[in-house]
Image (cartoon, rainbow over all chains, first blue to last red; front, side, top):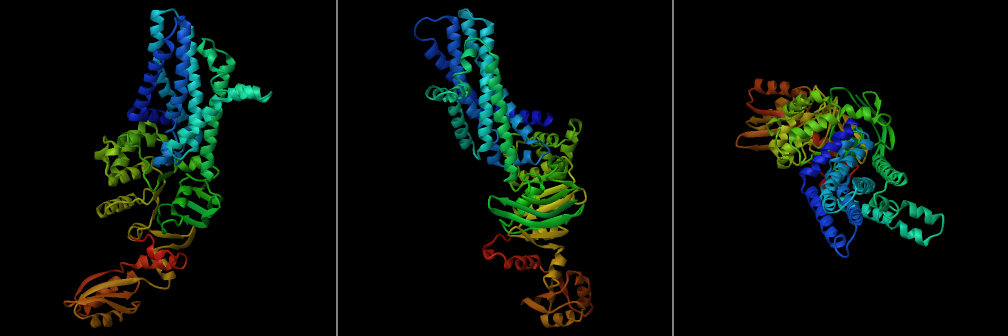
Length: 241
Length: 318
């Protein structure tokens, strides 16, 4: 646990000391704001809850994409620069390395997500939305972000370079997102399976609407666990190669 | 300290090292010598528990690295061929991070960092960003991270790689100063480096250990007792005549003779230098210099690897 927190703290420091971290944060906030103004606030009058739901829809998409870029450096960069050997030659388990890295990315994403709170606050001031709706939306964003970052960590464990890591993670994320389409064109039981593992379509809209279903929470946590487990296995396997 | 039996490591279908056997006693400074691609780094990575062996048994302090790598890593400090440094951290913060990662209690971290910095002469760089350090200092910080948790075994893979001559001497002195406090396994393809720093040599070629022992033992095994080089005033004939009267000194050859000064080389164990010097001086020869043959280790190494590696003439010797 101590090693995990040490790695997480160092990694978070690296995000906050690097230009990349600030560029990602600035882009996320800018895209959230611009898209919110362009796609949610425009058009016909809407209820406050519809506006808030629209914001979470945009933020969900931006969170998934930004997770790919936040996580691509986690293990691939260390492998690329030769610093991974510092961790792998220390008395630290591969699972501690993976979880430490993942936690730092999750905290960083959490900080960016928290910085978007001014948008729901504007709706709150000018309209009428419940704190519950806002809280459910943000919990959904963090769970979606957690699952996306875990998939990104797996991609980063598989790749030798950051660019490859982003490509691997992007492909896995895209596959998980479009699963719902496959669910429409296949027959049962495959249609059910594809629909269930669809990262966004099946599980996020409830949070967006201010509802928290245990099955959705479980799905995101299970995906996080499985992806991190996979990343750990990849790290362990590399020692035998 | 280290027992290696039948160590083999495959990368896919290719055996990087094959059936290695050697042991290292506590407190020894061992030179691991081989051409580029001979299997040095792979062996060191296995010993450093970064890679796990395909076959064979490696124990460090009696602990099997395949069964309990976690425990072995506590006893090892590993400097890979490229120092694993985080550029965005200061030297002090970096070493504190490594110390804590390797189990140094939080209360003792500052002392451990100060000690590592003192041993590697990096104290003045404590608050500097690693990104701003010169290559020599980066290498020193690399050694500091390897010893900050006070490991019993130090594994240094090419610690002088890329250093200028002054930095090489400084690094050599630093490694010598670590003798006694740690068992050191040092790899290099710089022969003079190994010769001047290590107690014993392991020579690896094409993934196999082709020789091991002290420089003298290797020279003896190769059928020669080494060479002694002398520089005398006068003609070479007189010096050769006197030198051959010393028991154990073999045939001599003239390396240079100009301006009344002759440089000669004799086939003889370096231990005979005092005897030879006395004989020359007592017989009225003015001795300007006496030394072990400079190219001795190089010739041993060439002989050991010559038959096994056809690319040797353009290989990585320095």
